[in-house]
Image 1 (cartoon, rainbow, N blue to C red):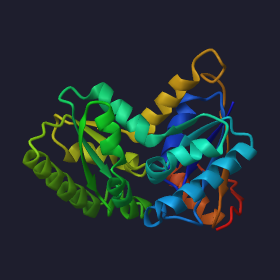
Image 2: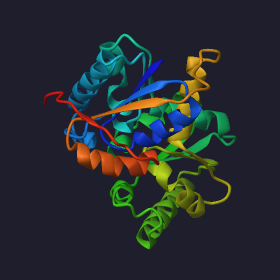
Image 3: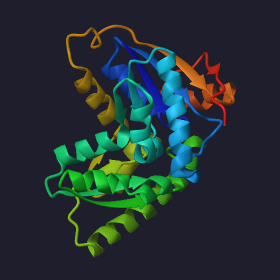
Length: 266
């Protein structure tokens, strides 16, 4: 099976990394729409147009199943993507909310994400549909710190401490008893160890990349040859393939040798 994975940039490679482990018998096509990022600064209509064109490209390359490894696109454009392509589509907001529903006993959930994802209220709405109360917090400094490679840097540790402290104060003010924290950005799995150090021990951290890969594997079912094999991956970017190879390798955890440059228009 050919599985397409889409993100506006590099963070979705953490999802691909988990998918490669979960579904080693699949072939993967990854598209990073790097020419048009950041999606968070765009209108809902523009995000929907960009995401739909990216989804159609992956299907034209043979994708039979799509994983939208972009929180902004999942939050703002999932319906538009599903309308644009004739294949099943899985979004990371859904998978994060599903995992929170499974693991939370208090039914109170915290979410950290980018400002655009928080402003969309997508996680709050998805959690509410599942009988959960969700408190979201924007953590805008984390993405640039990850892309700078400052994973274990003292600055990152301090920034995380401040964000988590503020979030816990806000949770108490809302009279919440959270037991689950969802990482609502695909950059954040690279910081999971540091985040787990920063949060109270009573909080379970939900890795958006891992739960998305697990739920994709469950959706595709067993006995189809996807559980064993040696996965192959092709990479596409809409800008700067050299940067994609260098920075993307950090997210994927392995070298990215060849990236095809594609033009999806404006």
